[in-house]
Amino acid sequence: MPRLHVNIDHVATLRQARNDTQPDPVFAASLCELAGANGITAHLREDRRHIQERDIRLLREMVKTLFNLEMACTPEMLDFAHGIRPDQVCLVPEKRQELTTEGGLDLSNISDSFADDIKALQNHDIEVSLFINPSPDSIETAAQLGADFVELHTGAYANAKGQNRENELKKLTTAAVYANQLGLRVNAGHGLDYDNVMTIAQIPHIEELNIGYSIIARAVYVGLDQAVREMQDRILAAAPPEE
Ligand code: PXP
Image 1 (spheres, helix red, strand yellow):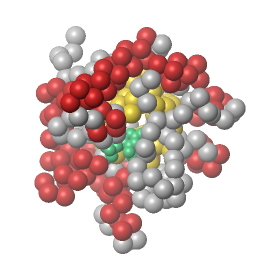
Image 2 (tube, rainbow, N blue to C red):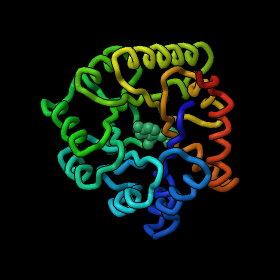
Image 3 (cartoon, helix red, strand yellow):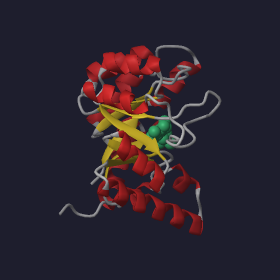
Image 4 (tube, helix red, strand yellow):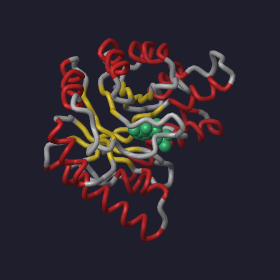
């Protein structure tokens, strides 16, 4: 059964709307863990639009499950991650103007130092995941680069309807199987919600689901504890029994 990692960025989005101290994503992370989340994810963006460095430092101390730092592969962020030592780093593309991460990494156009950057993170005891679109080329390159995980971008699936959605699901399933064959571990995320998560939770080999927006949005109505528990229930109900 995939583990649920809650992305708490949008708690910080609300706080930054007033540039205040509340609501605190660190406190929210503890509540998510108490509700049964298996991990916490936060994205420190170059523009610091939601999560701040202070949050990451405190999350590193407070998170008792698994702490996954999403970040762009820049010298500044790499230095920061080496100092913080999250359990996992997920490298993502970042564009200043985007509302959220729009696509997976373009691994056909990476810096010469990319493989060394991955190795350096791993040398600091950090597992490295690459956020990619579910294409065979990206998976092959991720394996050649020596990543531990790929995180398959589920956004196209989440946005598609009808037959297109079926096609996107097929791509994700094929990608998960192929990544596993090449020795990569597999995560998934982006755009997952209470309705579409079950199909994704049934894809073989997926270990972790990173889910943010839908959980934090629901928490406004039902509270964070219930929002996390409801998502866990969906994942549990969807997953085929363990062998
Ligand atoms: N995974 C990655 C790599 C992301 O960038 C995001 C968004 O920050 C998520 C998962 C979570 O996406 P959502 O907020 O749509 O659940």
